[in-house]
Image 1 (cartoon, rainbow, N blue to C red):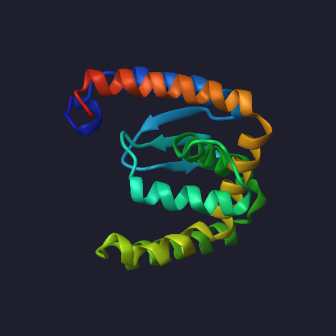
Image 2 (cartoon, rainbow, N blue to C red):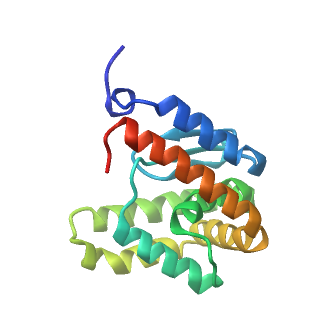
Length: 171
């Protein structure tokens, strides 16, 4: 078996299983450890990173709060945002998804080598793409409508990640 970042970490399958089990009631079929947050709406699959970027998280939370003030922590909102892609994916036509891909590719190319502060305006353009806005809106509205479930998700996800980090000496 070829070793890669994913397989060289301990407890990956358990973390994926735990996160999948927590998000399955929301329509997620599978959660996989990846390099970044990513949803495959038609397959109901979510990729999630080992660690998140604090700067981008701050901007994402600020953006979510511009939709509607929310108490949900950014980590759970990030997962819910990906669930939001699954929930709202069918709201967009194939042409709209094609345009989405073009916009994302262009923004990604523009941001690739920029320092964070210069990338910020492009991040907000990214957040404002209709599919991204729909997913974020779904996440915020779900979080605000289900505070007890969010508290439970926070606690269970935090426990799962702490265990995973400890096994892999990630601080």
